Amino acid sequence: MSLTTLSCFVGLGLCGVGCAASHPLPAGASHSARPQAVADVAVATSARSVVADPGVVLESSSATPAELVPLLADVCQIVPQAGAAGGVKAASGCACCAPFDACGPGTAAEPTDWVYAPKLAVTGAFTRAGAAQLALPMEGCEPHAENYGGMVVLERHGQRYELARYVSGLNAQQCWPVRRDDGRDLLLCRTADSHQGSANEALWQWDLAADDATLMESSPLVSVEDLEWAGCWEQPGFEVSSARLKPLRLTERAGRLELDVEIELRTGVVDPEYLSRCAERERAPEGGARDPALDPRALLAARTDYVVFRFDGSKFIQR
Image (tube, rainbow, N blue to C red):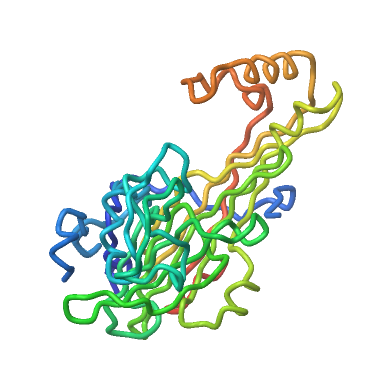
């Protein structure tokens, strides 16, 4: 079997690189055919023409929210964004949040400061083999505890898209489809969140044919916690750790896909220099460029851990 199990996607780039060596994760690491209206949205070719051994790095979508909004024209009322504030920085978006019950196509809606637009769109057959579907993680009306949004699944019927399902709480920053042996696509997604000085990243595999409860109760393949900011609020001598996921790598080995997850782990003790860098970062202009070498975490001792998953034809299993 070749790497054609990695399916098509919208606005997703792949570049060939060598895969890092794979080792078990040490026990010390915490794993705590489209409508003409969207012809300008690039759809990548099948992975068979882009992916080759020894591996590829999975990168972010290059499409912008504004470019992806027309994908939703058949399921919601698209309105202009009236002001600078908004859930997504887009020129326009859905007038209400998914599942769009209050703003179906053709409903009356005024420009609003808050519009809802996709962050990315992934093509595949997620709920059944042979379906022409799009998975779109979006900000929504959900609270923080429900990840501020969910996953919209659109299905192509002729020249139109219809809402196949909406899974509240399944929000993500990056997603990639992986073709299963039964012809459906598994959705591999990366999420990120932060709360009170703790930043968390996780890698998930979602089978969108499963019911909502099963999906919401699923556990991540990998989760890491970054307490760099929390260390800024402590006294010298406090032990601090900062774990972050590196870009994911897919490789074919012995006829099956393997997913290499690299984790940068930094550990150390808060000292006066650490707190000084925290204070300097607090004073820096918001949104300004900053050298990561000047961040507090750069003072912590670093090591790299790896965890490897093998695809069995339906899901990834840790080696």
